[in-house]
Length: 299
Image (cartoon, rainbow, N blue to C red; front, side, top):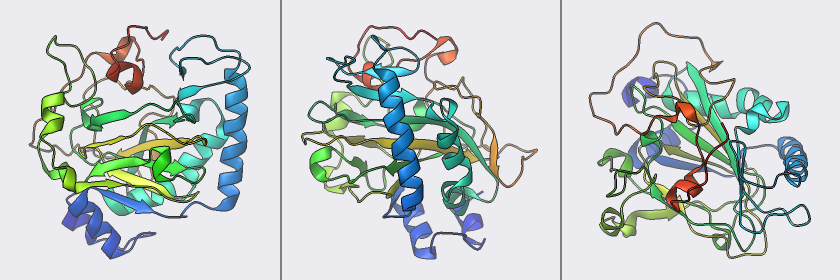
């Protein structure tokens, strides 16, 4: 659906001003939109996942570990596909306010694509370089969007998500290096040409949700604080957006309809899209790719 078609439908959660802002700027920040009850449940299961990681000794298709990770002092970069590892995560992704928010932005028929939990560990949480999501998992149109939920307070020192306002309406960038290897970020030359006056950092209190379009250029600084910054990310799309390539973070819930109903016609955006490597054999993580680490996924 076009933005005008979406705006013609009465919203469930968002205001008209918020929807218009998303279409204009490519992002939204909704403060305290997730209830305290949900936050308590998500924090509890996340603590359980961290405890489970104490038995993990190397990064694999599920866990991406920071240097220095151990049973005594866990240090995590990412838990891939958390929705597949505990029912609370999937219940949140499919039955909370999140899919209703997405329906207000892409139309009434919404499907799930993938999830991840980025930890941004205290004092060691790595930078995420400027990148665009859609190159990792191209679709027939550009409706896919990512919703990030802050489980705790996120200050500027903790490396909140940063976006470049309006960049979703600009070009898509090549995210391969000069050796033809996928690195999942803009080249240094392309990054140097970005208009940094349009950078907006989306810090917020617990229960805040960040939303960015799949074309929006975004990233985050390292975490320089003494507190971690877990960000639970769920990716959705309009039901008429179909993936061209294998899902890099495969989930048993991939393509599941979470609002509305399935559709019989695919919508094709005429603008071209970068094609990533073949992810069917497995995936590491954006951290490993951007740092050009050589470890391999066990998938």
